[in-house]
Image (cartoon, rainbow, N blue to C red):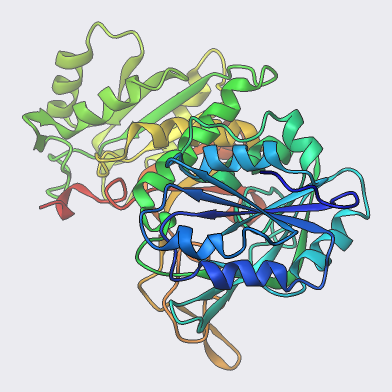
Length: 450
């Protein structure tokens, strides 16, 4: 039975629960104790098998609460069910293992009501452990230091204008996670997105967190980027040329290009993977090594997308840069490509979907350059200033984590640039540089794989 909520409801909070009996009452109470009172709370129990239903049932008569019990449908489908059932003009998600600051709704609402074109308001948040001890404050806004915004807020505790969500056909149910990332790409070019520099909710860290599965998380992000690109008719297919410099075993004993993985030369595997990316129109291998040239010609002689450029041995010496060879090749081309990709064969495990999302992210955000990186959250990394060493993150003595102000290390062996920027030889500090976060497998060099 659905209760009638008196007056016009402004905010609908939907609380998603799956086997969080240990935490759910704290989550529910954090909503009921809000200083802002014009809200409804929709609790969706997504097929829990623990004691959750018994605890939720205690609130069945509360005038502000509606309860939906269902078979397990997952995060995205359950979010859409809640949005369709909601009465409020604005909507916000809370997971049953997390909880609000008592002023969260008031502060978020006071910001979003300032401008009818604001689609999302999002805050900072605390990370807490299983016993509610604060581990850190996570700050998500980078607008003061970045020309291009591609750092979405957390999926939960974002106050969203529901009318815009309905226009955008809610969340895409083809994705099973990363609702915040999905929503960001739906909203950021059409509506205003506002950030509040206050921690307004508590995000619990424990072994069951969905975001702990980093490989699936990053794969889903790639799919979201690719899906967003494919829906945009205004993104014309630009010509992209990929260069694969190979010093060659005859020049360097450390060159692994002719080592084998599953009975195939590494250089052949790398090229075959690149051929699967349709947006790459040409693949040019640069080397002075005769054996590398023989392997390329034997495997790709009839392929019209693969070319071999022989550079001199002097150009291949270990103290020389392959970039000079690329400059000469580009100047010889009849038509200058809009973009170039530089691919390091020493990273043969880079997954295909990362190559595709690298290109699409470049085209979406119009970077000058984008590089593949991993986030380092194991090492303590410092920079030196006038007072000595300073830890490069936003925590005092803890290790870095995925959604913190992180340190990024270039890995994975792929980068993309606007050709004109590459030819101009601009200093890196003068370019807008984007990041493509990849997983641990993709980031490994060949010699580090056992």
